[in-house]
Length: 112
Image (cartoon, rainbow, N blue to C red; front, side, top):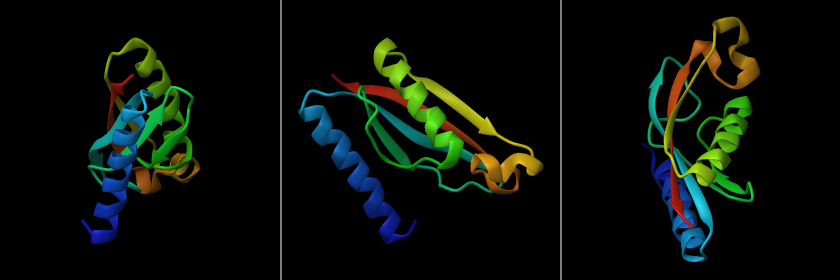
């Protein structure tokens, strides 16, 4: 992992820590597995608060929007969930997963 990527991921975790200290209800999404071509590597994070504000990235495109939507439900329920995203080659570019890539994202509630 490059130094720039490591710093970006640490910044997301620092944001999560700061938001939790403010008493915000949060969810943390983490890329836990990738197959084929994926826009973000394993270990990438996205922090989401109950207002729908977020920082970081787990994929981009439609996948990121779906993760934020699921995270809002997870903040409400308090129940973590693993999300799977994969697409066929012909639709890959439309949802942000090039060359038929697949990713697994673990979303867990934090703070609150």
